[in-house]
Length: 552
Image 1 (cartoon, rainbow, N blue to C red):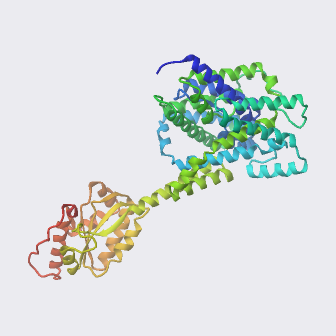
Image 2: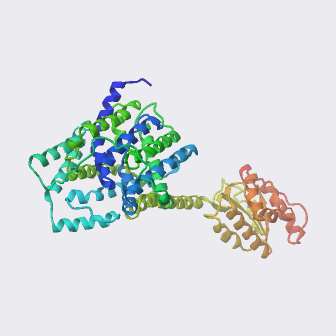
Image 3: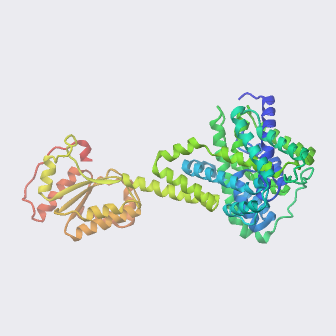
């Protein structure tokens, strides 16, 4: 692929301008402060670009990660968050070494859309205190915090903060429609900052003092005695970092021609980034879909663009910290409110909701769980519900029908079928999977067969069978045998024998030579059984010719 350094440098500069207010805002929202967001964008952004598996990814603090970090900060404090980030980096590297990146493709789209919608709602609600100009209430439940912030605003309204937040959000949203190439987020933040300074708006609370540079790397935050209690949060952070980074890389691949990421290498790069960011006081990082999209749209073609983004932010940290410190918190809240709104793709949500009822259920449950619980539990709930609904749909595909020997005459019994019914012989064909999700229906259907002496089970069309399916089949055969009904089988596949043998069903089906290769042979065996029992006149009975399909 051709290299265009100038284009990459321009793309990196553009992304840095877009990323600055987001890094500041997500740092503030996480509870560790704006300086933590900047440190993450610089350190993690550079290392993920160097070691990651995508040429176009831009990494740093994200809204999704902030959603997970807020309760960790509330419970364990800033040191706990840094420790969690360090542990998450180790876990991500372990996932990379285990080649776990390929499993990302198995996450259902409704789960992804659902937690994206939930994240957008949580990010928006997290900004309510700063947008209303009130102190952030205690607690980690976003709905409770929002309600308390609204109550505080009613008691002491701060319309200046509201005006700044709404103004920044409106400028970003309308500007993106008017001129998508212009980074209106930084334009709006600069305008809000100038308004606060020139008009001496005391109600426009600024970010506050920022250090002029990154702190020296340190492990002073590490408390070895707390590692056990922080393992669960670290797993949650690592899972989110892996999920969002691989999603972002997939989106980037889809926006370009000739680019394809390496999922395991991407996990490794994110692991290195998260190992290093806490040493400089940064929060856990992940690839950012919005910043990656800006990077691609502005013409980036190599890792130079993401590295440039990190370098520009580093220059800002060292050279412009006093100016950045004057940005009103309400302006950053407006940036994140607009970001949350833009995360919601109404068209994609509408399409997913209309696809199937199951998809709609999974999407809504995941979004509600994200809002009411947390992101990790939401993804788990979404995956479990999606899996259960998928199993239910697969199980419904399985059916048991009486064998149709003349498929060209639907709704009519062929001469052979009528002859078999007169002899109290019935042949059934089992189609589809016979496993735990739907096997018990066959137990009921088979065990309730009436007015027959022999049942033939044609098993060549069973697509899959597990131990539960084999056990249910065994129970049905035993119930029929206790009623004096013989059960014969045809077409047992090699792949089915292990499951049948494990529960003792194979010996039962093969007893007295009742297993046959084809259905016609089984019919001959059924008549021989009835003759031996004195229930049919002796002598051969010719079979009516059947189709090749029905004979298998």
